Image 1 (cartoon, rainbow, N blue to C red):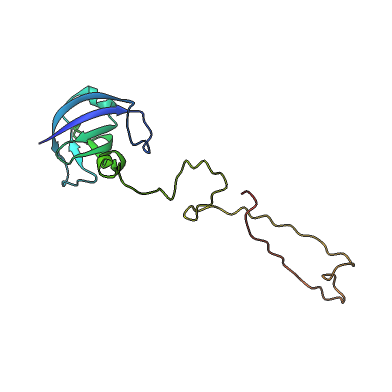
Image 2 (tube, rainbow, N blue to C red; image 1 turned 60 degrees about the vertical axis):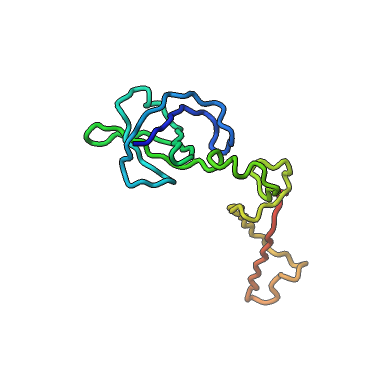
Length: 155
């Protein structure tokens, strides 16, 4: 049996301190599946107030979890949980003397993040060469030239 405190939480997953949460209650629950600390699945007691639960804390694992309710074919309900490492390990890293190299909320709009995958915006334009250019065909055989320009335009 695990003691689990269930919450209804409206904070964003990237928020470390979950302040917009309502405690729904603390219950003794059985582990439903193999015991996995990162993503446990627990069997819920019969209680309608837990239908709104989306966040929980399991003191035995010393972790907080995002959770989602599922119903089994026999009518029992389980809660599938996924670890919330930001909140769970806050005490371990809050005084860390490091500087975050990457941020999703950077105040520098021109900061390039090489780890972010972007979809290139490809534009193809065909221009007919005039007689006053080096690309104009001098014979009946035409010269085909492709000019490729790559780079960023929105910095």
